[in-house]
Image (cartoon, rainbow, N blue to C red):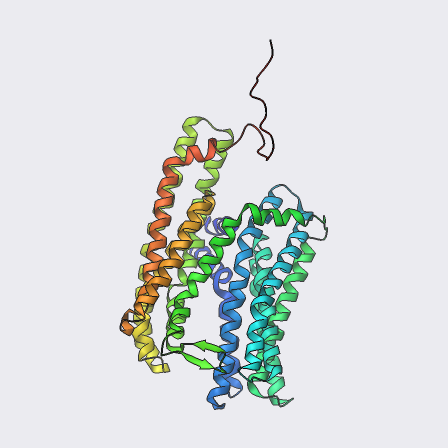
Length: 478
């Protein structure tokens, strides 16, 4: 992520209106463009293929299949991304580029196995209990596996700072998806939901193939050191747990409401609550600009202070270390407060616009009753995640894990409580979980500020740690 800040620092350095607009556009593209492109492609297919004229059962089966593809594709990829990102950063630092391809293959193999373990039993149930057409089930499973590869490969391109290429790949893949869906329906006369799902599958497969080809063009040598990657998972298991619990916390409140009486069961397999899920989507988009602000402001300026502190530690005087440390934490505090202030203004404006405009497009009633509370929850959530990133900067894995545990646990417990309340308070669980996670992360950052010298200068060992017989305590013989 620091590479984004460096790029934006170069853009903003000229301090003109044009560079300001370009910097905002660049940060937006690398942050949310892939997601927006996918949503736009799905909307265009529904608009041009007569999706609204289909039966209610067909539409809900398609919608639930796409929903599950995205949620569980992201969940199964989450345990691996943080550790593999750490491993890649380390080997790039040591210029061991021939280890990247083994890392890619090991991670892809593990991700594929986990995706199979999660996906195959569900597909079997969908066929036996739900009586769904095997061809439709295969299309859903194939899309799930392709999207898993897309999410996984994005990690490597992000490490290589190929943000523009990621957006271009998504644009190419989703353009192909829309065009091929028109061919399937109007030329080959395929059923609409089958054509849309097959088109999405082919689009995801195209994106994944382009990403893999780009990775292979960057890294052509293979050292064959596969075991080293597995050792990282053992050494940095806290990263695995932190990332998984954070992603789980994003959806666990949805899972809780999928168990209520208002749930919708499709084909005796898929479970969802459309009104709550739609309110969740709207609330997330209301606050998604926080990620753009974080990238374009917080991390850009903080990274410079962090770099100066690191340089002082490796070759500066004691006074330089103390001064750069103080400035670094002052910058961290200032930028978090700026993020809160700016995002609060953006969220309030978007919220009022949504309340006025959404009823004209059919989004009203229960959706707008749930929307305000979830909007507040996602506002706190994105602030919390920025604190987790700062904990990663200081290598406080215990703090990051504790934050993720509190977030997921309080979100689950709060959602179990809030589902018994009125719809206005359905999102209270997300608010409680995000606030608990934020308080935990803030406490850890404050503790890190007070003990950073100990963390930096006193964490080494004079002798290499290993299991075995303790060496003799005899120093020398006279």
